[in-house]
Length: 155
Image (tube, rainbow, N blue to C red; front, side, top):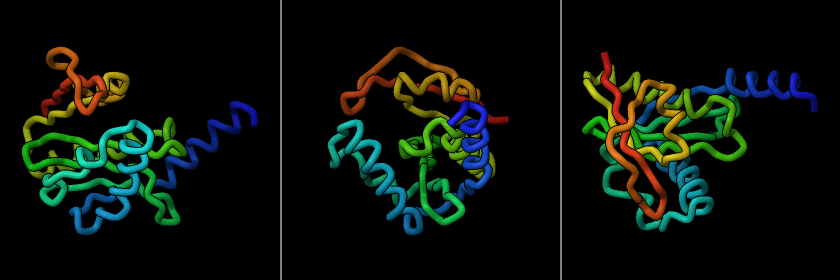
């Protein structure tokens, strides 16, 4: 595969993605599967830390391929935190994660939130910075993974 063909394939994959925002009752099965794969299996986060009492109170984003397969997820908590952003390995680097983040930011704006907060894994901080998030404070550990707090003011 030449680089030109790969680029076209990636762009085609992103264009065929639909992001839906829904309550946990609708997202549970697909979001849980993605989060389990990314956080528990790949990153070795203890399963008991992954699912929590906040899921029921959040809006969840699901990135869906044309066939309905979910490839990414994230959540918006009632206090304006974005979290549990996860993209399956097969969809990484295609822009799907950014589409999920944009959908969550749009939902937050719709709900009237003035500021968003997230705890980014340090390697992902540049990704969030491209969306306008700014690092606040130093690095800290969450589930054995280095993180930084980031914030964004909404217009």
